[in-house]
Amino acid sequence: MFDLDEEKISFVYALRGQGTTKLSRLRPGERVSLTGPLGNGWEVPSGRVALVGGGVGLAALFLAAKRYKQTDVYLGFTDKPYLVDAFSAVAQVHVASETGNGGHKGLVLDILNMEGYTACYACGPEAMLSSLRNPCQEKGVPLYVSLETRMACGIGACLGCTIETTRGYLRVCRDGPVFNADEVKFDV
Image 1 (tube, one colour):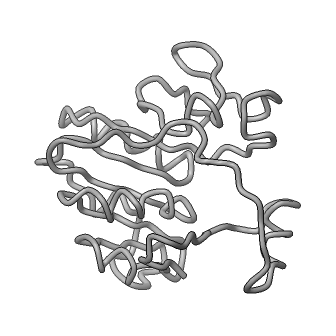
Image 2 (cartoon, one colour):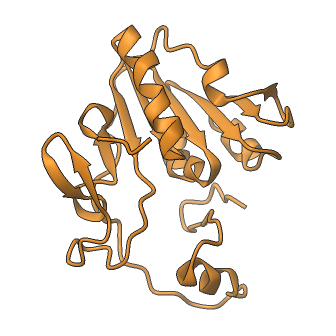
């Protein structure tokens, strides 16, 4: 559950490996060590911004929704939506799910119209991020994506999170995780 209190940190994660499995076994009150923030984040926008999140990627957009006043949030889910109430407390929210739970039946791209936005910030599955490129380009809206690449060291030493870009190979943990989508060579 997201907490709107600035003194706390919340996590949204999917069980995918040893790290998230260990995280899921923590009990309230247990301590963890964190290193961060790492890499770069969203630029402070000028104008109206569309925030587009899919799956656990929507968590990367919450602080932006909370801090940037001219935002509309578009959330996409496979089935049952989550964290909609937290986002609704800070921004206008639009929901889509493949099953129709919580809003539009279909993909988040079905409910997104880029008209009137000065930027689009997105985080979620790579296929969703790649699909956002055309609607943004058609309306002349810059698209910035926060990538969910698996990271090992988090400081750029292991090169485990390297992606191909128009500037060569870059490390998501150090050079990202936010990139201009025009420079990312998606694998989908």
